[in-house]
Length: 117
Image 1: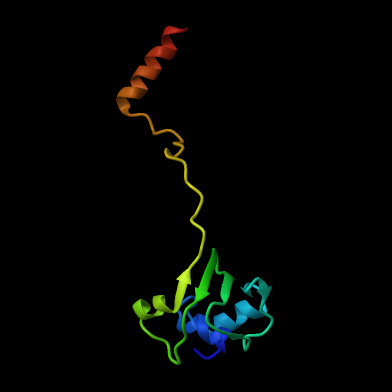
Image 2: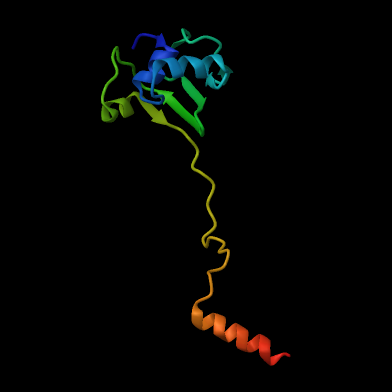
């Protein structure tokens, strides 16, 4: 595999939607190659480079190949190995803010309150 421009590789691997967006992310310092911030979109990437990008979420991939043109999503997934850590476990039971009482519940609440008077 020859080295390929970082912005083009991100676009061909379908990690970003457009090549322009890819270049903007790199210029903003949101992409790292082998732990070092990529300063230019033209930075070459080669096989076994590890790319870390902040795309709304952190994505970590190892380059496995490159293509000249953008390809289908299924082929694009073969261009990299996903090393992204799994998200932290979520709570088993979501916190309920309380359901609205039914008409029956409301009558019971009113009856309970009026007993205390």
